[in-house]
Length: 447
Ligand SMILES: Cc1ncc(COP(=O)(O)O)c(C=O)c1O
Image 1 (cartoon, rainbow, N blue to C red):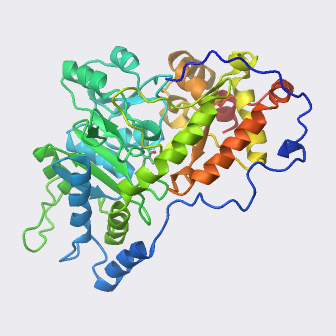
Image 2: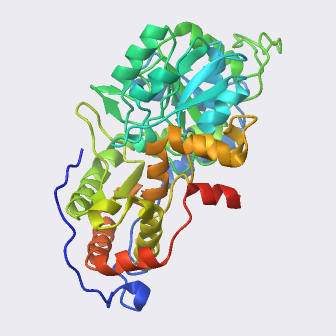
Image 3: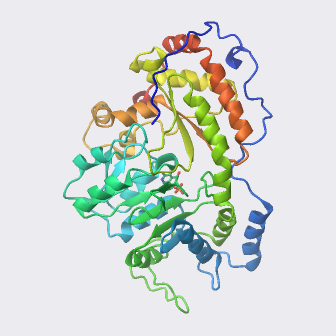
């Protein structure tokens, strides 16, 4: 983790030169790079191949694109099976149902994640029980998960948020004591590793999203489930297709389980298969630019960059940056204000920072405990999930553009932008103090 003893330097108070005040942008408007996903002629050909074949859905006789992608992703993750489905959310939903999780069961979910993680638990008929995240990795804290586990806990659902595997050894030990499976939400973590094994091979089942923004994208919607468990595989194949058995000849249309249609489209599978052929190469090519960018930001006082615990690798799906108000001479009550100020000033410089998740998930109206007033519910969330609350209020993210393997020069411009803004910390402090920003509670109240 990034340790820092740096102190905020004295800086010019006027802000002269900042783009927000009329100076030149650190990142010129026409700066090249930063496109994601990149669509090559080979990707287009893959989609055309399906269109021209006439096999337009996965139930078409002779369809091979879906099976091809499944085989390739099982190989890439080092798992026995892969089942391609309609989305990352469907992957989570089916993995839970395939493991027999349903009404009356509880599933432990981190308080910081995309809302799909909790929706999938509800869709399976179970109840998400939230636990706080670790401050350094932004992933489910095993020490927070243990106390909320109980007799109804039927699975752990850690999220490898932003591309960093969660602490799977500790979570695996907890699951082992409870005799329950661990389902990985690896929607953001294609290719990330822990102790030499890839995300998707770290639990009982691994669930990936192929959303176009993801490191492994598709040209629509899609998801992948990986597992070594033969029985689970059989269930998943049924659950994605109306509960029907895999046809050996003609389709029977006999439903063996209640289930929806969660099939992926062959065009989506073909596109992803084409992307997959350069996936490792893209990851290798983007690494130096991202490392160089984060190294420069790590040199700025009061700015925490993502750390990688020993034994893990990071897929860098999202880069989360955490300004530390106390290190910049501000009280912790100015966390949201500091983030909002930096957001304005950096965006004016052409650095496209954004907020990823605006409130802890358990505070969203859909996931609040029933029977509590809104103020009481939000107070409870603030008490139970302090790390998540601080992270959503205080941090900024870079998304998507850095995934372009050729984004190195663009990332150098972004680092120039950060360094320029950090020359004006006195002004940043004054702006923060003069313009309070709404924290997550206020954002939720405004709806
Ligand atoms: C952590 C996480 N889980 C689940 C999902 C859901 O995936 P999809 O959008 O493919 O349904 C996403 C998508 O952004 C995600 O980031």
